[in-house]
Length: 115
Image (tube, rainbow, N blue to C red; front, side, top):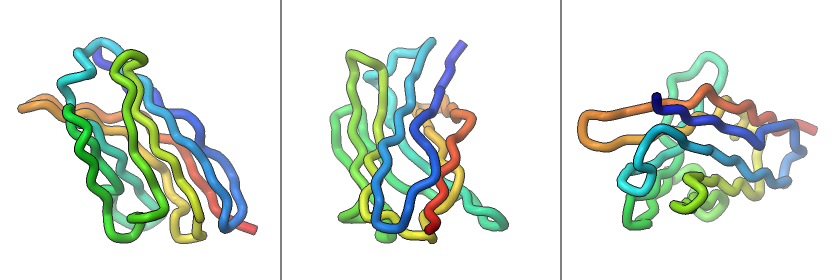
């Protein structure tokens, strides 16, 4: 079955960096549109960034210029590089895979930005 497994979260000080990874299995990774979402306590899940099967990237305004999404179709992995982190970036970050009517989610990885 399809699995998405995120890793790389943790506690970081404001201004710091993290790199999140999401490894996919049980799917033809290269055809999927991949994305990252996040959910802060008491808030709805929100879209952060996405990358198409062809490598076209898009970002939410709140993270543009600070976060970078990339993918490795050999390693079946999508990455999210988080730079210049702010306390308001604190959330559980989820990986998402989307192709036609198929949509899958990972279990999430916690990112906490605090001094």
